[in-house]
Amino acid sequence: MTKHTKVTSSQKASPLMVRLDLESKQALTDAAELRRISVSDYVRTVTVAQARREVASAREQTVRLSPDEQLAFWQALQVPTKLTPAQKRLGAIMRGVT
Image (tube, rainbow, N blue to C red):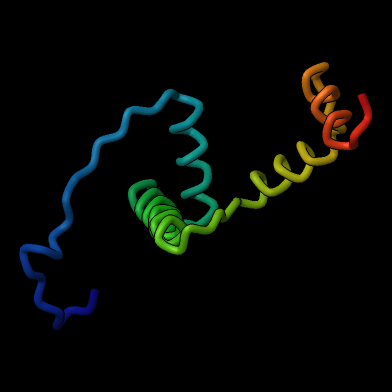
């Protein structure tokens, strides 16, 4: 925010408390240090951006996956499907084989 910007009541910061285990808090601290910003600034920067992406995705009715989620999804698709006996019977019926 610039020095000359007037802050209205709707623009004022609102506190948010989050409970984290020590490992999660340390991960945030480490990430903030890498960017040379405070933990609060890091959390605000990362979580607000992610929240906005998720809201936009929901409005567009599309699925957006993070790189880790994309990899997990792709790996799940690589595993051959094991059909249940009922699925095998249905497949046979659909192919006209009894």
